[in-house]
Length: 351
Image (cartoon, rainbow, N blue to C red; front, side, top):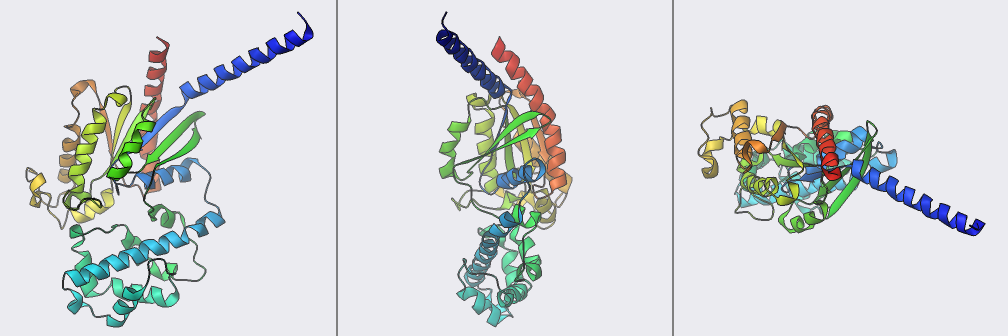
């Protein structure tokens, strides 16, 4: 064998070894698919994973979030103005000058000191409080109240968002976003996909080889309608979607993990908004205003969608995606489930 032939043989052997290494890494990689209806909090959980396991936000990255935060606030202001008018509540508005000023703003404007002062007066105004209390009748992101309550800091010229500000910022997910993390020497690949109906056809590309599905549903949205279909209850949509996902042939070998998210908003809402008042949940037999009874009711609703019975275990957690400690604790519990499933899948693939 000539030297050239030896070199060629070695090159081929190295190439095959590299392919084998890549294939092994791909087999050992844990693929997590975040699914759920729009506005459920999937993207917030996705951002939490970056905070916990990925690179931290740089000062420049934090500042890049300012226009999004301004826009989230002003969009909500415009929605409240619109519905104060629609509900004939303008007569209850006391801060007339601030109301007119904010009504004239564009959602892409900056929040200056004067705009911030107007928002502070606007948010505490009786007419706007009355409009906010009817938010189940229109589309508004409930977590925006966090920004309204923090407007004194946000209006400052030297404002730089902190991690909570970034977590609560909202940009509707379009397509598929992927992040990779090395956790306990294991590669985790997480996919976040758009939850609105027109985005769901893109999910099919994520289905193959998924170790686990984390399905996120907002437990607080039992009284709200879909952004894209004002005739459909958000919780009903989440239940129907979970049924489709849970029993999908693509996920037969995947762990199914349910996150009932926004427990903080649910705990606040259930004291004022009774579950049984909504026809689709008229079978609720728990105590009105009782957090534990409400959680148990919706857990049962979701688990009943599993058509495989005892053969398929659904792991569930009640979560608050904006609470980093809670997300870390919940994910640590899920991680053990996912690692066991990955070992099981690896053995299955070897057979």
